Image 1: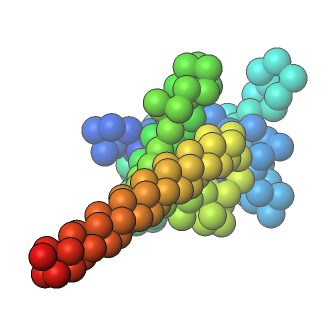
Image 2: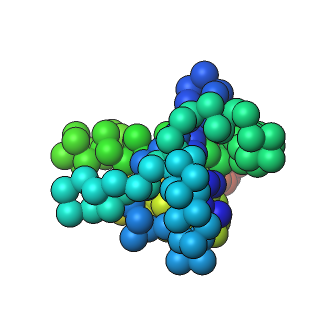
Length: 173
């Protein structure tokens, strides 16, 4: 739970990459193990500004440690999706929260599923408002579509009633 999803990710080329994690974000139960890895110089613990950060010392660890490489293979899709979601959320913030950057349809449903998974829930906290705004926008879009369909249905019903009336008048004539 320390490495996935906090200290490892998957790059666009499907290779594992190290991530920097804040010490305060890492699961409490993993901290003694992380300290042991820091002692063995497999992880680096440092201070950046006001934050204590942790990262993998050498990226080759992510490929050379067979068990970890297997975990990363198993979590590849979620790790890649988490990285993309964080990137999209950052781009949305940089674009002044433009509706044009929001998720919809299947991509939104997948993001909501991912953000609800244990481990990813905490890692993706920074993307939570992005996903919520996307859901709100999607709900508004669907409500607009439903209103449009209802208006079309009413118009079709009115047209059908007018045609029935004309048909009766023609039958009488």
